[in-house]
Length: 139
Image 1 (spheres, helix red, strand yellow):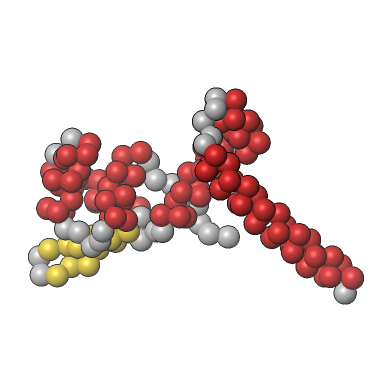
Image 2 (cartoon, rainbow, N blue to C red):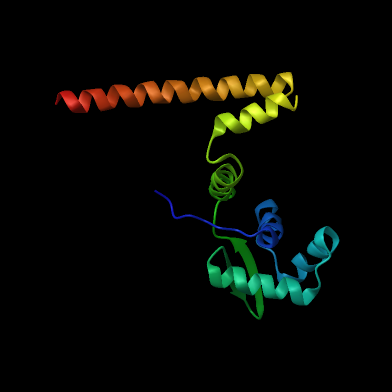
């Protein structure tokens, strides 16, 4: 199992820039983050330092310049954030979340088709896993 990755809302702003394109220098990050969230150069520098210490981003030094890059995959962070959200808002229940979306009419036809495909794939994987577990019990 992978290590849990926690990224705060503020950290998300910075790492998302690096997921979009990296490596980037601090001076390349500053105008992007100033435009997106109004951060000053010192705020950007503080966030870069904290996230480097935390191990979420890394850097390579070329001369006196540091080039920053993400050390975690976006998908891994999204999975953890989704788990946390489900736990916090819906007591961990995917069904409760989907019920809330359906009641609010927030699902398009395309969303429903996509969810059906995802559920079909999950069902297939669960059946395969159950088959493996049954084989192991017989051995």
